[in-house]
Length: 628
Image (cartoon, rainbow, N blue to C red; front, side, top):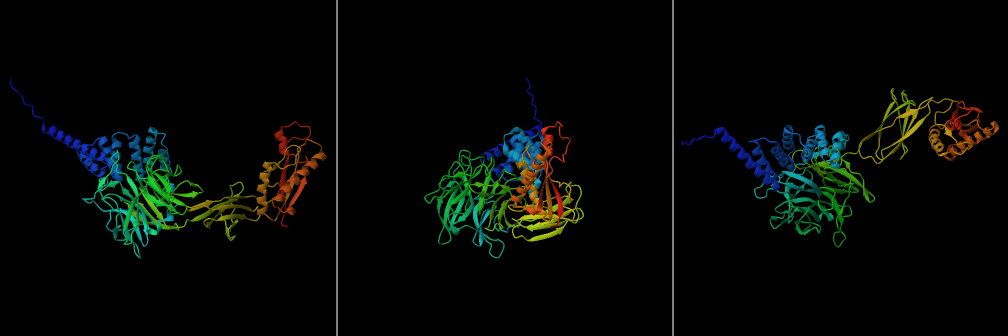
């Protein structure tokens, strides 16, 4: 029997070689992902993608890039995977967050809704969906802040800056160094640096001197005790070897250093609540100098990374306390700073523009207020964090990767701008009142400002912060009306809206306010009547030149003379109530009409419902004199 040879086609051999090469890089990339070497993993996945484009490989590449904050690249790979088959669950969530980073809020919303459908119990996804729907609010007060990039030489990244006399102390990285390269990012490990800022923008940087900087990550840090004590974050290592947990993660720890007489940092001591099993870092110090705030993923938290605090008891630190659900969420809360009664921190949740956003909360007794997103340009669609403000709250620094890498920016806070706008109309709201005179009274110093409504009844004023105003509209032939507006407690630039409805002034006609009603055979002022009389007090105050008649009435039940006496008692009760509220009795006339002016068919002997009889038991108001 003769053997037959069937050669394998060269094209098939080439395809097999390419597949084998792709598989090799996928294995290498997956191994690197397991070691948290995301820069290396990205390299291998990119190599594999040159040989084949499948959905799983595209997602792997996107995950490696997302871990390095390579937003555009990660979003492109997720988008390519989405074209092959719709993303769901965690992948839809991650792609949605990346689209938020790119400012594509409408597309992000559809991805996040899809992720929520897989996990409807996740409140963080619900909050992010709300953020995508209301993103325009983040830009409503953009003129309040000025943000400028600092010039810092010799570093590739710079973040979490705090003042150090006439210098700043910050966390930074140089470019890739062969002997000190972070496999996560491909840059050098972070160190603590110092840069002088006297009479010039920050420039040349130098490593912090002493024993603080080591072979792995250091920073962020905070100064205490007049700049003589340093609390700082450091990788968990012993000698020159990283100590890793069961997930192959080298956690962070907190340390304290003391400034030596020669200007170097030494006497390094470890925070007593560090652990090899979780991270503790990013310290901040409270105003009392004894409360330490920090970030940790220690057990007992509410999500990923939470904010915690503990107090120095003099003999050691008390046990850490979680800052609770007002501050912490199921996401990450990080980078705390305390200024006065305010706490600033960054979060991936709450009301969020994308990435980490800086939020502000204030201490109110034993509790913290609901955190407020500081909006653009403090926050962007990227990561924004590490805010520090001076004691006046007007100047400081923030960190952001808005330009592509973590960097430090100078921040200037402009005072908020407040305005008042309104329209004067007749009470029906349809017809404007042109040329109405508008008086704005500052109720703090009682200074007056006056203006005139235009042909459409519109008016406007500029307001001061933390001030309450009385706004009064007057015009001949109309009843004067007043109202109030206040900027007290407002932190953001705001335009307040006040619309004023004016009513015609007509003598001897029923005054257009709700009537005052009474119980059967009674003249007491009921609670509902008291509320209406209180409103009338405002009308008296606004129109001091008017005299009113309070005419009271009864229903038809009872004798004519008895009803006259009863109605007179009702009128006097209303007058007495107003006098007790401060109204001049000379401006009030009480008159009883008995059953002589019924408002319906319910005369003597007519069978009516109780509600119909109630309509007749009333007190009406008339302007009987204008001028004193």
